[in-house]
Length: 193
View 1: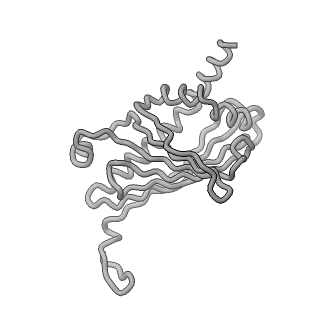
View 2: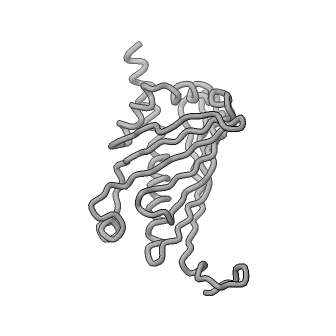
View 3: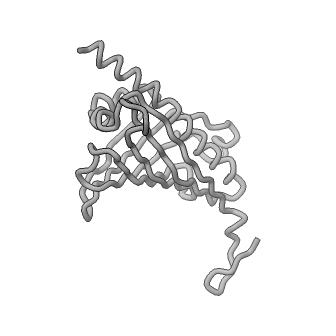
């Protein structure tokens, strides 16, 4: 469908797809403990190994206008349907650039909130944005909730719906695995103590 835009017409609605997501999981430790654990290099490596991350590189970390801003490049293990992989990636691996922003100094204090903006090497027409909130789980002593909500916007004609489903299903799958990863991490920490 053609839509007016500043005196011109462009085909936007037909090629633009957007899917909202809202994922929440409960973890078996309080929010302050989880924030401390997830900030450690040992946990970051454990988490990357558990997720099957092929490569992870911290590109930058700086303070901008009172906000901490980090940029990370990640090459994950994700299942991309053959036809979609061939059409979009060819022989390349999927690579994501994840920019995170939060109030400087707040990263160890619950409730903690950070914004994210994720792009990829598949196409510049797929962007995932949202907010992650880590807080103590209401009514569950010693547990916390991690909630990620936002949207995936795909403006890739013909492949938009397939790419948005892929992005959101992989995001949901990674959060579904988080409680088990944290339980395994805590078991490893107890065994090492």
